[in-house]
Length: 244
Ligand code: PEP
Image (cartoon, rainbow, N blue to C red; front, side):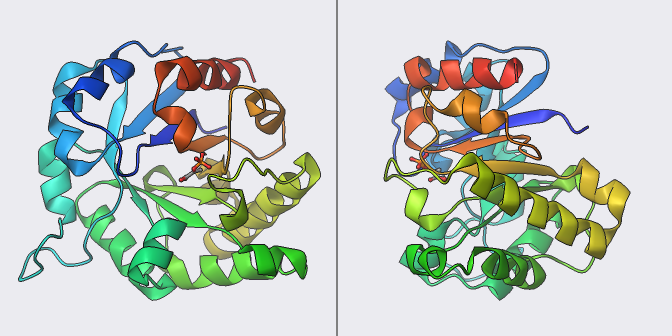
């Protein structure tokens, strides 16, 4: 069983004063806690907060070069990041990111010893036409390198229609998606590797629904957006994972 992981994605939220939210989070021993603030806060969060890991929200696929405004995996590692979120649906929508680009970014992250959290998930239209599992298999096939070290890869299943909407799939739907992802990973990388890769659910996880989501088979934790911004919301989610 891999260690449980709860990751907070602050997106484009957070100034210096918000670091106080991170410093009062509970730190149960059996749970890895990760916060991914804006890149401007990575170093200060690492310095200010003990007991949690700090990650980035994206990286460029190249090691260096003429890419104004972008950050390489090496820069993020140098700033103190140990994880990086890749292929989040907001990156795919806002910046036109493709699966092939996510794959290149994953390779770049691994070359700098970052742990990649690769996000996949179906749109509302794909969900409504019953295409979820096909979409997930396709995204996995195109977004992941040919081999994967279990300790460097996390998959986040995030239905696009559930992100920031308050809508959440049923437990049975989450179970089916996570089972499909585990099976795909086992067929591609072997059973032992697949069992070591953490599978996170993401999309409107709140204190009120966290325990139910964490009880679903093959859910090793969560990727949390809005509810990770305050200790009042993120704390209870961390505690729910600790007792799951
Ligand atoms: C996310 O952005 O990854 C996310 C899951 O957001 P929220 O928890 O706000 O739905």
